[in-house]
Length: 384
Image 1 (cartoon, rainbow, N blue to C red):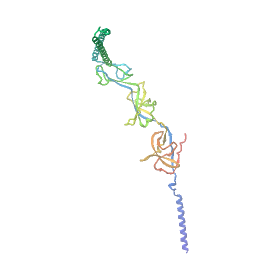
Image 2: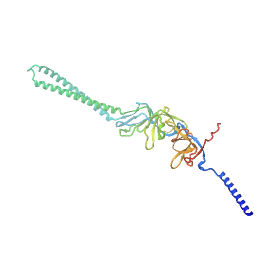
Image 3: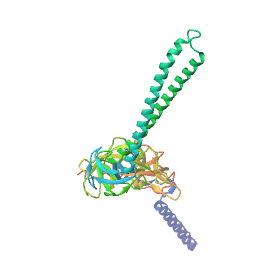
Image 4: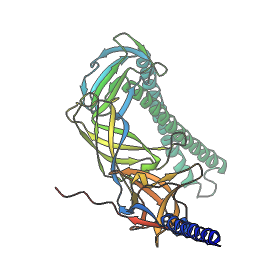
């Protein structure tokens, strides 16, 4: 009996120790994940106007550029300019000689004189025949004085004379137009500048044979004002504004800034490059800039309306989607977004967000939708 009591006491002590151990283990075990709120650092969605520089290449070209060619065939008699010469509008650049044009002019003048002589002779005959016809016509009013056939013949003669006069007038006009055409061709023997500019190329010398099918004799470019042609990428087309001033640099003058004003907008994109040509007017009165220079334009990229921004780390990207983790009522939810442009260490986003939304500072797919979270704003740096 004594031994039985000892066994029972030992069993009770063992059970007591086991229960106590279970209680300690239960108290030290972590809470269930379903009821745990995960702490995360969060940030807010900011609304700002996108305004940042964008480096865009461009080309400087002459405001006006023309190749001077010969209108008529001839020999170069004189060239009054050379490469680099500054010229004024109407200034004589070169002079040609074409002996055959002289003979053509003489023939045209002779044809005019012949037509004039024939017209005068026809007018004199008309005047004579009209002088004979009028008395016959007056006498025919008295019966039996003049035969009716004579009056008819005289009338038809006058009408024929009038037709002949009109024909020679037309011949004279045609001859004069032919002579004028020859004179105009002779005027093309004098090559003049079409506008104020600079001769940038010369391809002929005295004695050269030139004509409509030969190459250009000279090249004249207007360089006091230049065009800066910029191919603006599609993403920046919305920021193109007529009259806006843009700065640019050129390799010839490193560190120096130049400026141009948006003057002409292409209004259409090149489907191959997805860019739109835009022309800037650049004043170049000093002549430091030259056509053909490469320019790097600091294009100011702006949106027509405000955009939403988040830190780059807030955007999560997987193989299936790009999203941010928004926190509402301490619950995480994924919001699909599209990336825009970067500005001031932030990234532009487009999606079902609004200003002031709270999102995870570090977006990751480890924060599943519906997860209970405890949002924590990171401390702001102390003011210095």
